Amino acid sequence: VIATAIRGKITAPELADLELAYAPPFGSAKDPVNMLGYIAENLVSKLTGNVQWHEVEAYREKGYALVDVRGAGEYARGTIPGSINIPVDEIRERISEFTNKNVVVNCQVGQRGHTAALLLKEHGFNALNLDGGYFTWSNSPAHLQLTKETKEKG
Image 1 (cartoon, helix red, strand yellow):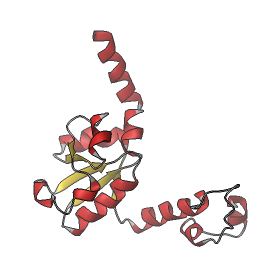
Image 2 (cartoon, one colour):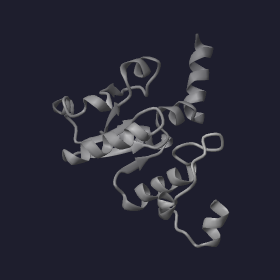
Image 3 (tube, one colour):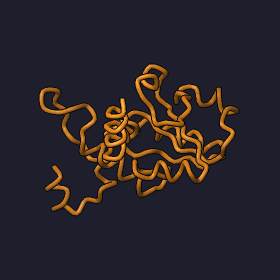
């Protein structure tokens, strides 16, 4: 499909609108090609800003609050140090707990973080989403090295 899109000069955001036959044995209900289009639309429209795993510490040093929007169980299994936990489903009810207008949100892989960033932007926050979420951050070279050093120290 991608080769055909390239040949047809279809732009990345236009991939979201492609009508691709859904056959359960051969593909998912949300085709990865369409998902790529949705991601491209989000990047082009700049609905939310994004932060990469290696930028998290710099944003923390700039005074940004780190908010983990995963559920309590996910948060308990590991989080970015210094993050507070406010699940995405509770943001509207707990908006008064956000004392910092500059926020970096994260979830497991980025989807709930995107939703949380949009909700916070509606309330006047400068909210950025961590691309790839906690999964990407926790598998980053810097984090893995830190984990290794911590284990070696005992």
